[in-house]
Image (cartoon, rainbow, N blue to C red; front, side, top):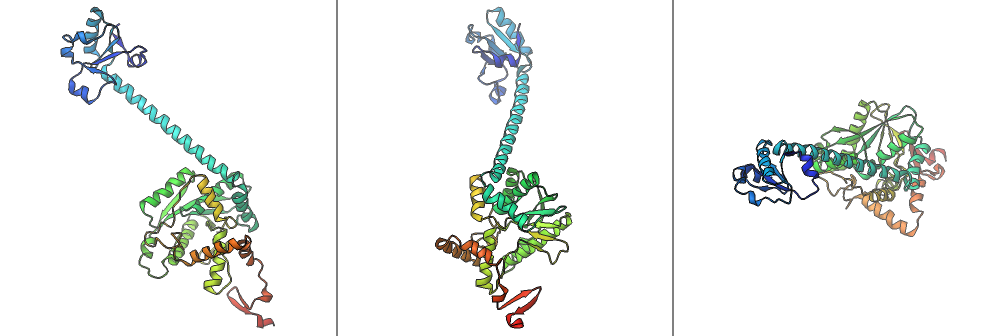
Length: 387
């Protein structure tokens, strides 16, 4: 028996003495792990270097030359074998098993990703059930945000709020009783490659099947010197309405939360001289039949941040390439009116834990008998009209 297969060589329990008898240049390029080199032309003269107390495996290109030498060595008292198929058999074996290892690694990675996604989903309905899940479903029921037959475009900007909203809608689809459809809509207004890839990667981590469409809003707004963020927000919403309607949706869902609502109330009073709020839902004035809903209306931002950190998730901020310090679009917030109001609320909270809820409820308890004037359907009313 002069030949042994590559599998027999690999499974050899004794310490094998492997000799590569190919040309030195080929040996130096690549060889069997741990093999020594003795060119076949020199093998007869260097036979003394081979041990007689170990199995000797000879490797040539195809197994023919090594077979001849193995036969001669066995006649001389060596336990010598030729690798069947030569070095090519090792290459085939190595390639096959490398592919199998890669497939196993891919399967393991996919399983790990799926398990992490399941843990994130479990955290929503278990650890954060009271602070996030119940408030999400309460807003949907209390403000009648979803009806049977709805097709909703869940608009994802890539930030923490919209990404959580997407996962909440997935849970609602799994466990809710509403008969509705969902499209997870991502608009790329001109993100840089890093931010865009971050959004796509997070969608994969969270197993959210996003639908992406392109726009050139950032390029258009770049030339605007006054209120670029206001223009950007208006244009983005218009593009979202338009794409959602194109996809057959009758509603778009945005990720504004409780803190956005109370900040908007105070901003209107302090800087707009008016009492108004961010509504939980409203009809579009420019897109007939379309409606905007805010399912995170009762969810606190600190709980969203807690959920994000608990699951070690990292989302983009503003991603606006020309207004990096602009707060109204979610950037660093320094120097903006919203940042000032956020800080004011933070200070007031230190004095009373009820401040934030009182601000929120103030627009639910408006007493028109003690209001100087108000607007309704575009018409202004004054207390003297009925005094």
